[in-house]
Amino acid sequence: MNLAKYPRVTLGHLPTPLEPLHRLSEELGGPRIWIKRDDCTGLATGGNKTRKLEFLMGEALELGADTILTQGATQSNHARQTAAAAARLGLTCHLLLEDRTGSDNADYNFNGNVLLDQLVGASISTRPGGSDMQKEMEELADRLKADGKRPYIIPGGGSNPVGALGYVNAAMELAYQANCMNLDIANIVHATGSTGTQGGLLAGLSMINSDIEVLGISVKAPKQVQEENVFDMARRTCDYMGIGDIVEREDVVVNSDYVGGGYGVPTDSMVEAVTMLARLEGILLDPVYSGKGMAGMIDQVRKGAFDADSNIVFIHTGGAAALSAYVDAFNLPGYVDM
Ligand SMILES: *Cc1c(COP(=O)(O)O)cnc(C)c1O
Image 1 (cartoon, helix red, strand yellow):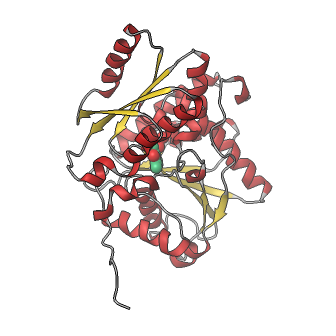
Image 2: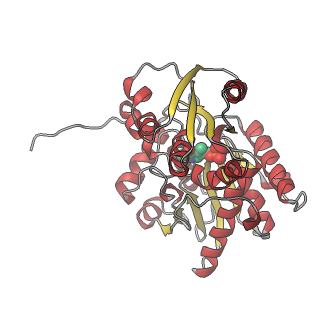
Image 3: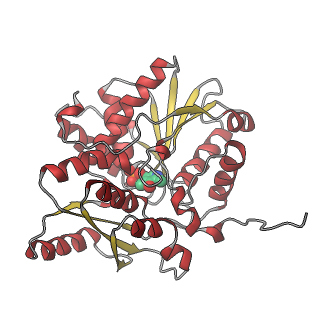
């Protein structure tokens, strides 16, 4: 497979590092845990959407777009990376942010990713929770076209077969790194939401005949629904690349036990995971995605789900830019008297 035949712009710092988590591995006493630093892709604090945007923005430029539209939750990492990519390419960017929580917390509404969206020059509008966000973007695109603009719509999370190519590429990148390091990886674990990451990874791993198992930790949808959606994304990505139906349904594994009260709602295990990684490894996770993903991995390790003598890789998909929007979730001690 030659990914270079697809339009693409360079946005990320790739390859991202693959590093051992010695202290976490020791603390948990299970398999050797590694981390793939996709939080270090570099675009306005980075994250997994940067990989997808290399291909999505490539297509946008090829189509002659001058305006980029996308949507997400208020604290969307995808929206922030899209806005930064647009800035870098000299394109106008408008973000539709869905108010999924109804929170009136000032940090949630204006700090974190929302601060960065505006700093990189995107304009932002909100829509009420439960809106048909794809339809909202299409209506806005129609209005912009009537004004003579050339809008390009990026779906939520950048998840379509074009965006998923970014994780086909990541699968090949990880396999190459592991081979260079003589590292036999048994499992990959990561947070799954809009499905482009897991769908792209599964398509890429099947394509190179890898037997690494992938476990997606859901941040929203129930297991069955998320597995079907990831399977669909993987198949459509294979179809887009013309490589046949090579992803099997049983390759698609999602665990939804760590969602808690819902999308973006903090859980005790997320707080524990974020705190552990910060204090054991100096690595910042986020409350919505990578914190819940890591909480799932830690719990699965404790339950003995992975062979103690194996290597497992957590893909850090980013998101720490949202931390400052969630100050209240972390019971921090504040100043002490010394
Ligand atoms: C979007 C996102 C995910 C989920 O990736 P999908 O491709 O949407 O499934 C995971 N972690 C972070 C930090 C994200 O922003």
